[in-house]
Length: 88
Image (cartoon, one colour):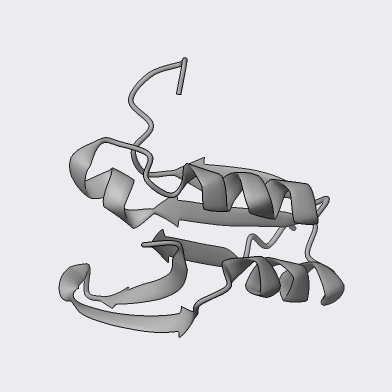
């Protein structure tokens, strides 16, 4: 069994929405790279990320954060939110 820990991204931060409400958001970390590295140090081999801003408006405002996490860790990354084409 593979377990994918998750990081939801908003404004470059690791966050969680309460019942999908963007007005009810908890910021867990200003540095999601540290969160990803903690998951990896704990033995995770895969990670799931969601660009919440992208999910809402179809863009990829957190792509640089995703790229930074990609460079910092060796986990397989699954991502959603804002991806509307094969090019993206």
